[in-house]
Image 1 (cartoon, rainbow, N blue to C red):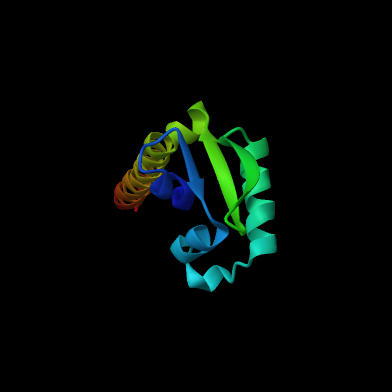
Image 2 (image 1 turned 135 degrees about the vertical axis):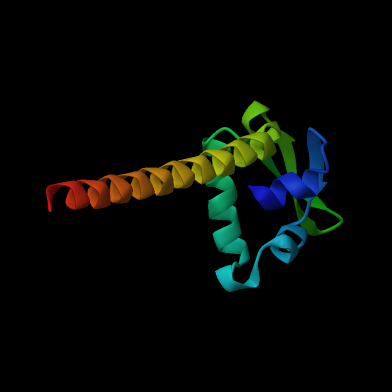
Length: 110
């Protein structure tokens, strides 16, 4: 979804070829057109955008109309990362606190 969002450049509707999307995706995923279409179809089902297949001058083209979830993707991604960092920080603080209490109890009881 990040690749689609970056290619949209803030537009609600845009045209993009499969090759433009594949150029943005990381190489280690080893994406091809068939895998890309399955991913795009799954994102369409999830409600991120509407996908229409088209043909522009003999070249396969996707017409993408972003929905609310697609337009809010970047904000949700930032919020998800923030939540993850806060959870990790909370877990670390709880771990340190429990270790300190354990050391204190050991010192008191021995």
